[in-house]
Structure formats: structure tokens, C-alpha cells
Length: 211
Image (cartoon, rainbow, N blue to C red):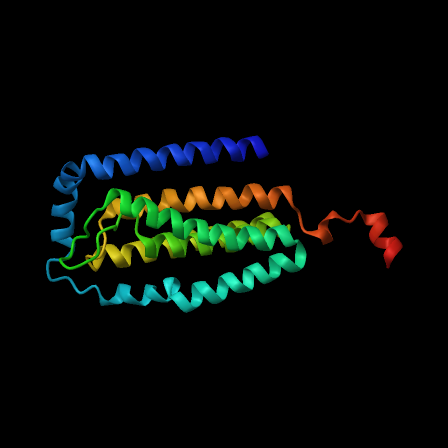
């Protein structure tokens, strides 16, 4: 399984490099496709309903949630707690690094350069992805963590759509964020799989002996 994660990580990194290269060197080509879409989306349509999705990417929620996840990780296995913190920082740094390298300007005038990938989408996606990984890591029933996975995907899509319809990012910026999320979460998955929770490491007879 570890080899599969490693191959997936290498593939995701390669995809991120390719996407960043296209966003930087073929920006005008992307805009020919995306500008008409954005004009249609922003043509007097009331997008206020999408603002409700901002709760899922609120800074207080992501910071508090990450602290809680890392605390649970430290309690069950110290390396897991470290992995959660490092993954969150890694996602932030990777997003900023790629954003500065690509230097793409958002649809609205006055927005900062570096919308590819979108930081808001990337940070939210990494956090909700870590929530899914924690369910998987502690051995939750497959149906449970798969439901959580579906919820995390929907939440990340809602965050992306809110930013797109509000004219803050281009659709391809959300795609770039999805790749950053994948690279970050695969990194965390490799560490978590190699360091199972201490409670799950106990064999049934050992647990009975200590009872």
C-alpha cells in the first residue's frame, strides 16, 4: 500500500508542475475559455446564496479544527499529531510557492496576484481532507469514512463554487487547488499509515491481559 501512496504522490506532484506550467505559460489560452464563462456567471446574477458556504472555509474553523485534529493525533500517536500540523503548513507553503511562481491575476480588478492555486480552496480542502484521513486512520467503518469523504468533497466544491461565482478566482484556479490538496493529503496518508494508533496496535490477547 505504501508503494501505491508513493506512486500517487509522484503523479500528483507531476500533475501540479504541469498545471502550474500551463497556468503560467498558457495563461492567455486559458482566459479565452474562462473569460466568457466568468462574464456569464457575473452578468447580474444574484450569487449571495453561495456566501453561506464561506463558513466551511472560515479561518477560525480551520485553525480550531486543525488544533483539535492534531491534539487527537498526539494522544493516539505522536507522529500522527506532527503529521497533521506539518501537512497543514505544507499545504499553505505549497499554495503560496506555486501562486507566487505562476503569478496569475484573478477575475476581479484589485485582487492580489497568485490566485492559482486558490489559497481559500486549498486550505479548506486540506483541512476537510485531514478530517477524512483521521476517520480512516482510527479504523472507522468503511461506510462511515466514505460518507465523511463525500461530505468533504461536497464542502470543497461549495467553497470553490462560491469563489468562482463571486468572481474571486478562475475555474482553473480551483483545479490547481485540488492538486495541491491531493499532494498534501497523500503526504499525510503515507505518514498515518506507517504509524497506526497505539490502541489499534494492541492484539486482542494483550488487551485481555491488561484488562
